[in-house]
Length: 541
Image (cartoon, rainbow, N blue to C red; front, side, top):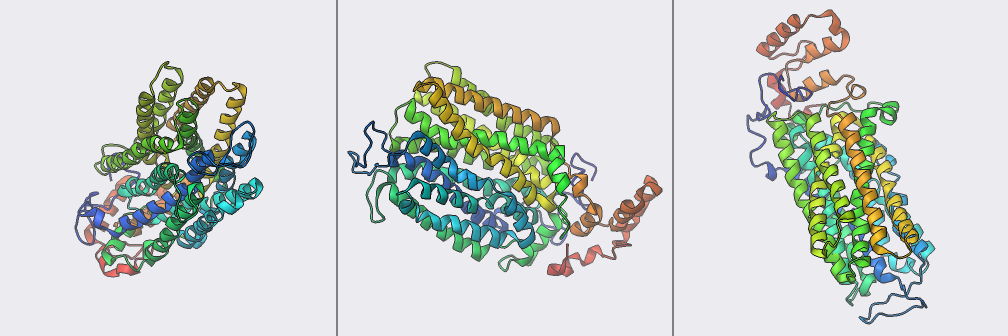
C-alpha cells in the first residue's frame, strides 16, 4: 500500500474495506461476529481480576478497628470491625496482592507455548477459589497476606495471556477496539467492586453478611466466568468450534502476520528502546490508574469525611467515565487508521499523550487549587479518568504492533514492571501520611503532585521513543508470511527481497508484482490467490 499506513501492507488491488473471500466489508454487522463474543467473555474475565483486587481495598476500611483502645467490636450498624491492625500491617495487606501480580512474565511465556485458553482460565480459577477463604484467612493477618499474594499470582497471567490471544484473533483495523473491550473489564470490575463492596459491608445476608459476604459473592461471579471462558473461548480462531468458516478466514487473512514457533528474541525484548518506551509509559500510567483505584477512596475518607457506602458510589464515577471513553477512543482510532488518516505511530503517540498529560495536569489542579468542593473534585477526577482511557489505543495495544509473535511476552515484561507500582503507590501514600503527622490536606497534596509528575514523564518518554511500526527483531520472514497471510500476489517478490533485495532494481520488482497480480500466482510460494477461499480451514499460517 502507498498510504500513511504502509507498515501494514494490504493485498494488491484491494482496500481496507474489501474482503478477499466474500467481497463483503468487514464493517458490515461487525458486532454480530463471534470475535466480539470472545471479547465480551474476556471483558468479564478482566472484570473478575479487578473484583478480586479492588474489593479488598474498600472492605479493609470496614475490617479495621481504628479506635485508640482497639479491641474486637461491632459498629453501630451491626457490622463487625474488630481487627486491630497497625498502619504498617494495613500497608502490607493492600500491597500484598501486587507482590504476586507483578510476576507476569511467566504468563506471557506460558500462553505463547501452551495457549491462552487453559493458562488464563486455570490460573484465574485459583484466584477465584481463594476468594472464598478470605474470611478464614483474616483471623491472622500473616495468613491473609500470603493468600493475597497467591491471588495476585493467579491473576497475573491474564493480561499477557489475553494479549497473546488477541495477536491471533484481532484483525489489524479492529485491534484497538477489541483490546479496549477486553481491557475495559478492568474499569467495570473496579466500579462493581467500589459500589457493591460499600453496600455489602453495611448489610447482613445469608453468606455471612457485611464484609465477609463480599469475597464470597464475587467468588461466585468468578466461577460463572470460568464456565463461560472454558466453553466459548479458544487460544486461536483455528481451534474454535463456535466460529464460522467465513469469519475464521477473515481473521486469518487480516490479522498481523504470525510466525509460529519462532524463538523469543530475549535480548531485543529486554534492551530495545522501542520496548522500553512502552514499559516506562506503562509503569507511569499504572501509577495514575492505581491512584484512582486505591487512593481515591482513602482521599474522600480522609479529606472529605465520607462513609464507606458513599465512598463506593463516589469512587465508581471516575471508573465509569474511563470505561465509556475507552470504547469511544479505541473505535475512533481504528476508524482513523482504517481510513489512512493517521499513521500507526502517530495514533499511538497522540492517544498516549492525551491519556497521560491531561490526567497529570488535573492531578496538579486537585493538589494546588484551594477550596475545591467535593463535587468539583469528583468532576475533575471523572475528566481525569476519561482522558486516561486514551492509553488503551495508545501504548497498551502497541505491544501487538511492534511484535505480534511475542506480544504476550513483551506485555508480560511491561506489566511486571508496571505492577511494581502496586507496591510503590501504597508505600508512598503511607509514608506521606507519617511525614505530615495527620495533616490530610498536605499529605494528599504531595501524593497528587507525585503522580502528576510521574505520568507526565511517561508520556514524554513514549512520544520521544515509541513507534507503531513492526520492529526488525519481529520481522524475520515477515514479508513472505504477510503475502501468504493475506493472499497477496507478492510472495515471490517478498522471498526475493528477503534473500537478495540489493540485487534487484525497484523497476524489476514493480514489473514482477504486476505480472504476479495479473496471473494471480505466487511464483515461489506456489499459492494461487483464487484458491484462498477454497482452502477454508486449511489455510496454514
